[in-house]
Image 1 (tube, rainbow, N blue to C red):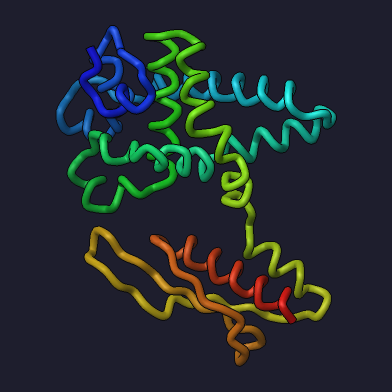
Image 2: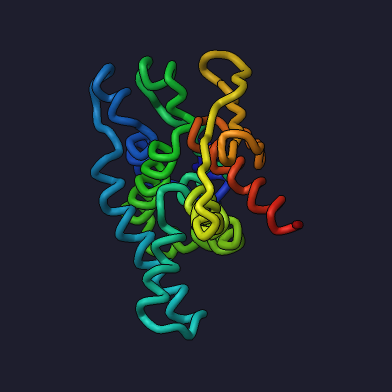
Length: 223
């Protein structure tokens, strides 16, 4: 009997419900309350995701091994897995310790990505590889384009774009909004200490700076 929203979403009925709970339990919660955390499941889930995405790329792409390896790395990187996890609100179901909760743990890419891998590990152990394929087909394969976009390092791209002109870039956080546990930051890029190139927002300084760099690149492309 399906008892959890994740089971309903993927049409999976865990035989061992405790295994699902373990997959959703961060080490900070286990340290405070006892019990198992999801790190061992994350280990096996990482291998399962690598295998299934590797199989998909092998069957659907014609590139050589080096290109396929790079593509798989983009799909299974922390940023991408965090994005896939957010598509079914995995972060809402996590068990986090009080300290991790206060510092915005539910929005951290590392925690969401690890939980996604742990879930895949739990599904593999409880239901087998075919059930894991259902998850891949539902949330990963239809959204690969966005995953590729998420992994672009806009700051590095912008720096390389302007490098021939020997321009200097400085990033600064110019605004913070929201509650302490749910902050939104606005970053601005200044070129040569005087020219504003663009602004961007995000849930962390790094995300805001990346979005500012993306905005700057789009502005430069228009010119």
